[in-house]
Amino acid sequence: MVTFPGGARIVLGNEGGRPIHRGTVAVRGPCAPSREDFMKLGLTEVQVRALEFVLTWFGSPFDSVTSEPQSGGELRWGAWPLSGPTLITALAHWRQREPEAFEARLGRLGLEATPEQPPEPASLRFPGARNAAPIEGRDVLAMIAEDPRLLAALAQAGRERGAQLAQLEALVTHVLRPILASYTDDSPEDSAFASARALALLFHAELRFGRRGVTRLVALARERPEPPIAGEHAGERLAEDLRAAGRSREASEVWRILTSPELAESA
Image 1 (cartoon, rainbow, N blue to C red):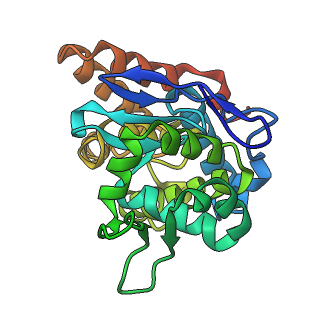
Image 2: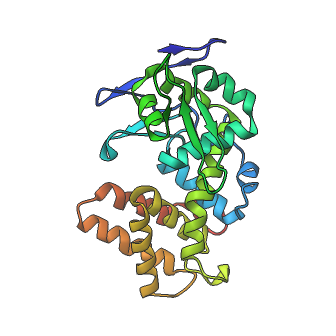
């Protein structure tokens, strides 16, 4: 357990020899952003419903901090969860908008985040002790992943509303908007991914499988281009493909999206 000034406590677990925090702040709840906050990110009401559903059922709490074994222990933070440059961008967004809050949670421990200044991306820096050289970028994230106190501080940061909104802003800007721009038609009402359910399938494919999963889902939809149900038909075929490949957990998640009343048009 790590206790911070003011009495806040973060209870860490251990996975693969690394500290982790599973999280305590759900995407839906009194400590999370409202649906109106989601709307302010420039998403439509339908897109917000889809994103909120995917984050709630398949994402993580806002204050979760874990390491991804499949990527060599890469640090992952927040509801999506974010990693690498997108995580750094979220921290930089937060520091830019709420410098005092950032300083209270992370800056006092030596972390420095700088927003992108094109062509330079957002950066994260940790000054070296004494005569040691500063640490930057992914090396800082790797250091946080192994340092219980820094990891706990990042978890505590995820409880701040401004940091949560920064997570969502980075997610929408750097992950979801490129998907929507690439795989939805010029006329949204004619798109295979116009409904909340179809959009949830699209977002889930990115969350679980990355861009390859999105490409596969879109390819299946284009084989039967019958808006507005093409996206849902593609989801059914993707679920069957996953089941046949022995990925029953992911197939079950797709079927949950396809059958949930939360994503019905009248919901």
